[in-house]
Image (cartoon, rainbow, N blue to C red; front, side, top):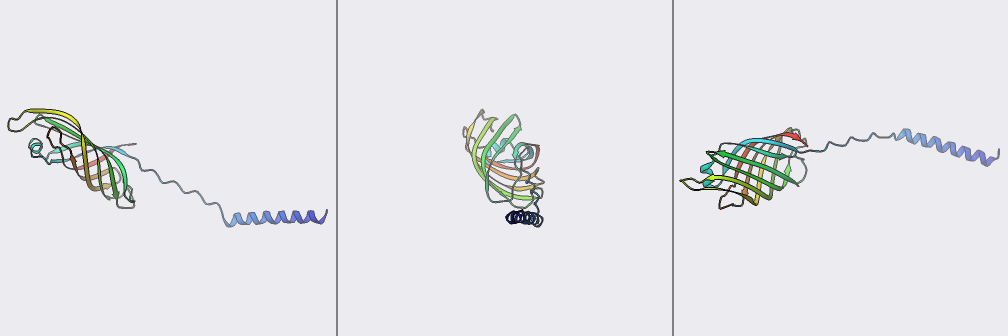
Length: 195
């Protein structure tokens, strides 16, 4: 066999050994598992509603109210914007109301693990739907109606194990028929359905 053929064979063998050696030195690293995505909850809450208006306060004292919440597990990173929905209802002495703000919230949580207790703070603006049927105090007339208005919300609280949340939330809503349903809601919420 010509000398040049032996040279080519020797060069190929050397390259093969070198490649195998490099593979042994740098083994293939296993791919890291992708972190699980944070999902939202549809939950319910029980708490106390404190109306700002003296007229509404005379009809609905600070008794327990039921509410519905759209809940998202908080991420402990920088400030970010998320959608938010909740509804608070009242029914007392023949008077009833529902207020349902839909907002864009700027929020932040603190804590590395969403399953631990996490303090959070958020603020937002949006649209508020209000529906009511009231008999005004001091033998006043019965008024009823519904409509949309602007609203702003500020909230602070704690979450526990993603699903459980304690919060204090103040919602300022524009008046409807000269009625002001703005107020403070202090509630305990629990995420029921994950989606």
